[in-house]
Length: 306
Image (tube, rainbow, N blue to C red; front, side, top):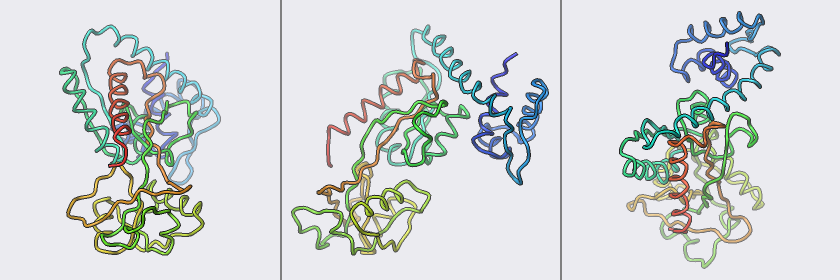
């Protein structure tokens, strides 16, 4: 008998590599994860995992099983979609997650519109980094994620469907009265001698800055690492440096800064991608969420630079 729950445990463990992390994603105890794996291994008559220090490694039998599990997972999502399509009204829960700027600019307006248009629908939002979003999708703790490709699985990963929904240009943020504010056009190399403020190394924006500056022919002199965009813009306002700021991210009015759209051949842009579990697209609730997110993203693109 096919036990999709036990296969899900194996799929999450393969991604997270420790029983403790898999248990956290699945909201169960580590002992429950271990019991599910032992039960599945016993039924199949093979070893599925071996210890490798604090981590576990999958056996060849487990990796073979995973390929089938990914296919079965997609089929199960399509089956759920077929069954749900018989409902005349949208009811139940839709769980959205995404990186902070996309959550603020896209997910929250989309959730408000969905709540207005479908009174029987309960919408939940979580702000997470891209890698965490995929972990939540895989563990069936989220239904739709807005992520950044730098920390995403390959586009052909059989577990997910990924589609670009919005191009988010990066502007140069400088202090008020900075010399660059007096130029008609500013190119990225014009800021080559500036001090740069960035998010920590594990954030998508860090890699984007390094790649853009390398393409522009210089290495940025990074002097400050700050986690939140509010703190980044405050540091810029006080003259500690400049930064690349996603256009989706607003700047508080009391932060005395100027946002400068970049010209020239190097115009760094990040792509906001929408991700779901493979096979779930036709589920009425998820389809409504995808449609609304696409509509909000289209409206933002039409507005242009703000």
